[in-house]
Amino acid sequence: MTPNIVVIGACSFIPFLIAFGWFHPKVFGGPVWQKVAQLSDAQYAKAIKPWQLILSILLNFFIAFGLFVVTVHSTHILGLHGGDVDALKNSASSMAFLKEHGANYNTFSHGIGHGLILGFVAFTLPILGYAVIFERKSFKYLLINGGFWALSMTIMACVISKWGGVPIL
Image (cartoon, rainbow, N blue to C red; front, side, top):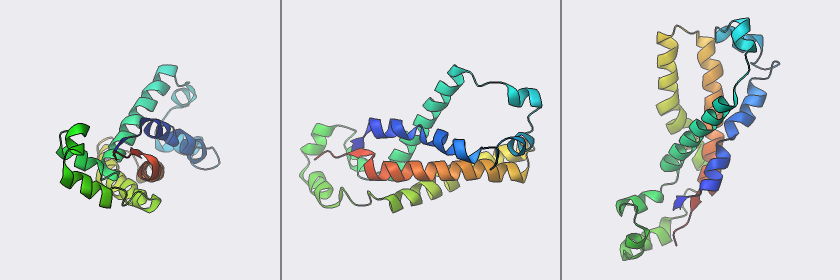
């Protein structure tokens, strides 16, 4: 499978949708998040600039593309051919393998495993944990931001697992 750029691009907005609820003042937003993030009132009140939103969408796209790579396994068969679709199509064994197994694991439950375990536990949690330790943030900060990214990456991986690949066949 090759990446479905439309689906991956749409997944770039999933963290925004989740953040709307997760960081709502009645959940973890407002004074709760401001306190654990150690933001002053002036910093908290400062508006996000358009270029910052665009940059965050781009960063979310990188996350979504990374989740595609670890979630849609049939794309690795293309990788064995150096990304050359014509070489893959001329390989009888690769085409037989894709025909038999290419659509395996294109499910939401497969996305849960990869988004939560690979995306969050293997990458995001250690990086966020490292920042919490050395930036001297609280455990509550880790729980709030870690929970946000665990949920975001899990939903992103579910969508990508189900619709993120374009079949080569």
